[in-house]
Length: 198
Image (cartoon, rainbow, N blue to C red; front, side, top):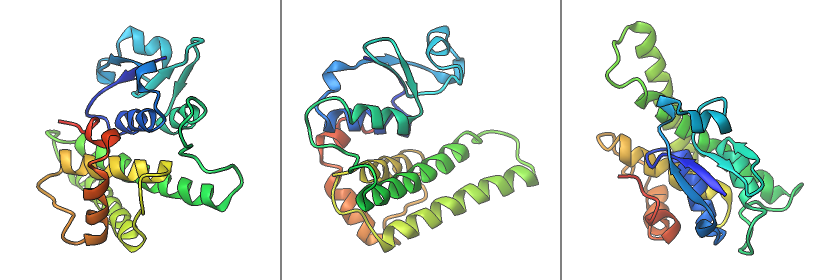
């Protein structure tokens, strides 16, 4: 398998963390990719020019981090990160996953506007993204993850790591102590420690 990857992408980090938790990271060739440059090699595998993009051993392109993670959960012998289909545990994990991805989407959207001219419309857009992150963090603090055992928890860790990386001047821990305690513990796990941006 090969993976179009950018080390600062929280979505690419999520995919690699999942691969490590599944014990299959050595089966993936990392292809450093700048999606903003739209290299031909990426466009060949993903017309949307986004990372991460995985190419399976049989040459099938797989894109969107959620889809890639679900595919990787079918590879390897480690405990699955996606609970059984149709179970309430899966629903809970997927809702957590969606919340974390939403935080990442909003944070990345803010980051992409750094250095751009600002008008009232852009300022309102940035404020909306910042508010979405704040509400997402509040929801996670009210019901924090318990471990690093399912896809939602992996995604939450990657979202928090991205906030630390890109928005260090906006500390979130003091207002979210339960979430901060959990993140401090799981950040030591190899799948997160070895994929941390920076």
